[in-house]
Length: 53
Image 1 (cartoon, rainbow, N blue to C red):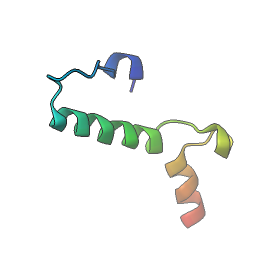
Image 2 (cartoon, one colour):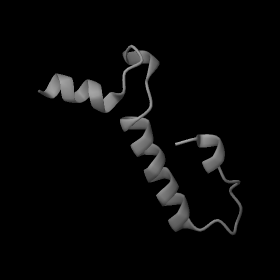
Image 3 (cartoon, rainbow, N blue to C red):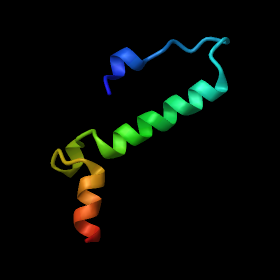
Image 4 (tube, rainbow, N blue to C red):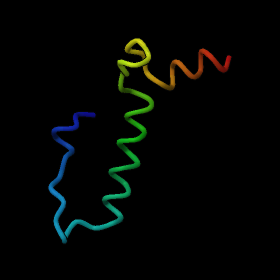
């Protein structure tokens, strides 16, 4: 997901449903695709599944 192309300016016309959907999509991206500096540039879901296994 490219965050620059998915960003939208929040205006009064921006519907709550679209906002919730966008937040949900970003949280999924953040936890399943984005490497995190604090955990040695690993993806949280990958790190979690290694620990949980």
